[in-house]
Each structure stands twice: as structure tokens, then as C-alpha cells.
Image (cartoon, rainbow, N blue to C red; front, side):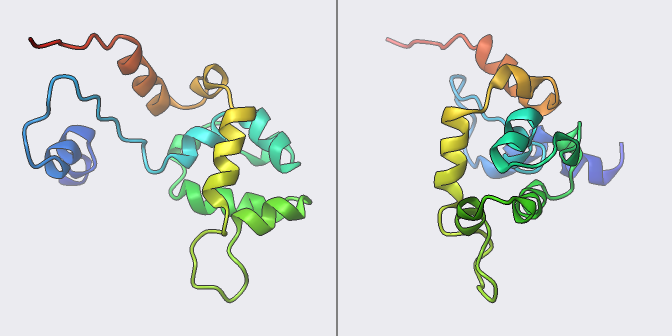
Length: 141
């Protein structure tokens, strides 16, 4: 195994980020690169939300190098000005995201995103979903 693969592996990152032993009831999952890949994984819903063609969203969003940047680029193509204003940072701004980036994406998740559809296009989401599904907490007295 090459060093790069080791450094980017979930167990390596979890051990690096958690400075104390992981509690057995902690489910700690890492989206492949960014959580936006999981949002993009429900391609039909995200395309409809932005008013773009589904074909503009890749079948394998986990493999995107920078899902957040890709999502911003897609949003720039949208004809929905209110979405562009909320998600994309203003021209000349030093901000990386728009003023209501999180609010709009939370609304998308609550109203349109379906995990069962997203699971089809995101192996990392599928692993996280499976871990939660089989989770059996340990109760101490």
C-alpha cells in the first residue's frame, strides 16, 4: 500500500483527528472528500432543484476532486437567480460560499433529497448508512 493511500484512509484520519480512544458508541464516518458528494448523489433531485440537466451531474460524485467547487459551478449554470445569490459567493467577495449556502442545502435535504436514491451513486454514503443501520449501542449502568 502506498503512503498516500494510507494517509487518506478513514482509519488513519479517525486516529489522527480523535486524540482520545474512540468510544464504542461513536459512529465516526468521513465523506470521501466533502459532504456535497452525498447531496449530488441524488442526481435527479439536485438537477431538478437547480433547474439543470441531470447529465451535468456525474454518476460517481464520490470521485469528484472538489465536490463543493463542483456544486458551486453547477449552481452558476442555474437559471434560478435566488439559488445563485444564496449559494454562490458574490463577485469580488473573499467568501468561499454564498450567504445562505448551508440554509439552502439544508432545505434541499429536507424537501427533496432521498437517501435511498443517493445510495445508488455514492459508495461512501452507502457505507455510512450501513454503519448507522447496524449500530447497536452499548448501554452502561
